[in-house]
Image (tube, rainbow, N blue to C red; front, side, top):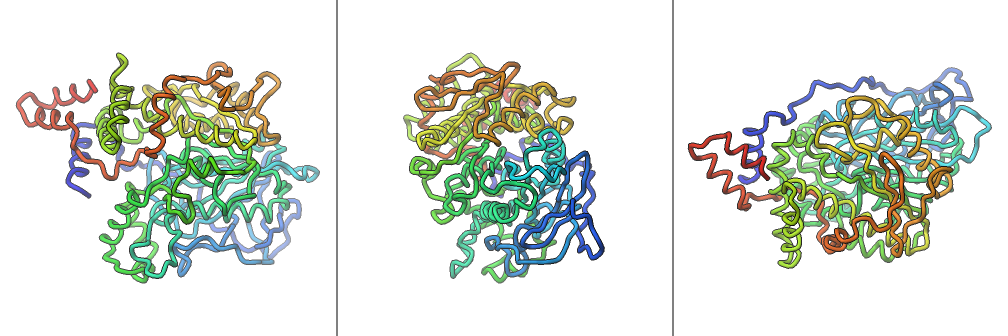
Length: 567
């Protein structure tokens, strides 16, 4: 860790009493391994797949199949390799328990991090209605978020039971994939022969393998392989944005739902280097053989030290194009798209960094470092944006990131997709959290849409069921038909001419080209792929010197805190 980064951490720890400590929260779901079944089993609860027959559990008219391996597990010689197709198998297996979470650091807002972890994490789960007469149903495949370093399908928020209970004519699938140092790390520096050239995007290739498995096997669960919708949120939506233009995923989905994640959530080759250097330094490895000899326990210990530096997918020119916006422009796909963002995306990090005081300290540092990389014209534009209104600077910087990381890249993707003549719909979520300062932050919509109304970290109570019913109807209509309109809501497609955007809040209404002047001011920022990466932040910010000088004086901590709050 650099001196500057250590100093940032020290400031945060000294002047923030709400920074997350290790939480005692534990996920209530008990881990167990699915075993081979040798005795008789009910045919009505089984699904015959190419890699085995899987027997699920029925509850409230829904059959759940958990922990189905969709690929060979990436262990031993397959570590840091692209997922390989699951081998044919004629045995019968339980599908009672979730597979392992990918290796990650335990974190209070990522409940799957408290579940059993392992390298062998390539499993998916299927929820389908128990009515045998329902065949060729639309399939929705959910990709969880977690900043590419956390998350897992065992998180109760992503459980598909209540969603399928409410919508029995849809098959719900959730997919686990490698995260952190196992799923997104650039090993080119130690891979002398190019055997690990895809290592920086393995999590994405895991998802491709899952989609191929679904194409091959989902009909056994009553699903229609020609009617698959890929749905992601946060970094999961970043994955879906990328899969939409990846050659490896072409033809594997008919529609996509992209919530609060874009191609901006990627790294350049340069941004991926620090994690590799830290890995080699910690392990003293000089070649791939050294890394392959590490035990799973050693990898977990390494992850504790390095998870905070987790990479995003890399624009490597192999798995992903180096110019992602250009790839969208040239994409001739007819994939239908429902895409949008929340009005207060970046406020999510208030909770994650430990509260408002830490957030007020972190944000100007990030902004200053990001603008250092810009042309003078764009830098002046960015500073003009955050200084223009009589609003506290912290909220103007927040709005800057809401737009340049999320809303404007989403608009770019929607615009490109609409030009390909594919049905495209855009939304803007404004229904707020009840917790102070969070408003409509990233992730606030998930309990509404997944019908897990009690699983909400952004509200004191369960979410509004009437709102949940309204937006679920839109999402499910899109999954079924490619059109999210309902009997009460006429949702017009998005185009560059009209830019019709559905506001989803206390009321639902179409708005033509919302925040037009703001969009035009900031749309040039897309070329920088701003992504919230703070791995290379320095303290070369004028306000930091001001804070440091004050804290060294006799005025004391009270004035230091007042200075931070004034930002």
